[in-house]
Each structure stands twice: as C-alpha cells, then as structure tokens.
Image (cartoon, rainbow, N blue to C red):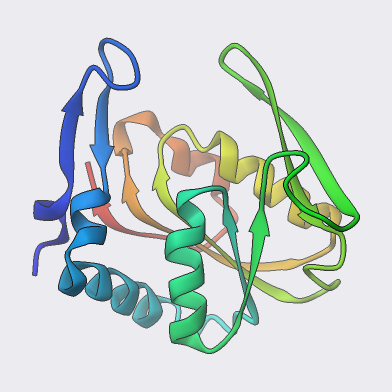
Length: 170
C-alpha cells in the first residue's frame, strides 16, 4: 500500500503559497493508519526505545498509537498551561517570534531510551526544541520518526547525530 496516496494537498493553507500536506485522509482509513503505525514499529523495533515522546498535537496521534504497538509508554510535549504537574520547558525561535514547549519534569528519566515521533518534518524547529528539551533531561534519544518529510526544506540537517526515519518523502 502506498501511503502517499492518502495524503491530500491543500493549496494556500494556512496562508497563500503553502501547499499543506493533510494527513486526515490517512487517519480516516483504518488500513492506511494501521500500516503507518506498523511500518514505524518495524523500523524502530530494534531501537531499544523505552518511551515515545510526541509533540502537540499530531505527534500525539502517531506517538501514542506507536507506543501501544511497541508496548512502551508515551509522554506528551505540550504548549504552556496544558500540563497539570511541574514542567520543564524550552522556548525556541520561529520565523516571526518565539514559541514554548513543556513536558512533565518526571516524564522521562535520565538515561532513558526515547523515541521522538511526529507527523511531519519541515524545517525541524519543533522537533529541534523537543530534542533540546530531552537533552536537558539527559534522555538517550534512540531515534526520531516521521510520517512525512518535506525534503526540500532540509529539516533533517538539524539532526545529523540521530537515527531519523520517515515513511513518505516529498
């Protein structure tokens, strides 16, 4: 099954000139969604991952399903004010301004083997912030996985020291 056939291009979203890669058709198709999770599980089967970390919001979808498939835990990275317990946070630069991500301070243990999962790698800014946050927690990042990668944006270059795997390339 070619998973790319379940990705819909939406022109001029969220602003003019952008072609948005809409994953909803893939999620709405049980076989395609299952295949994406099965493929990621196969790729990372020997990673030794003990927990998956996914960033808000679509990283939750793939990360939690993959954690279930692999029989390991899932930890969420969220926007400020969304987590009820004490958090660690990181502020990072965007094209115009900054953003902040937070994670429960006890979500990942020092030395724990972590797999980061997100839906899409574009410029890599969000995942770069997640990596930096996990590094401050002294986690052992064993891999980074994506459903989609926009190769022309070269986001992968930010993670040359890590095992990066992607199912669909554009």
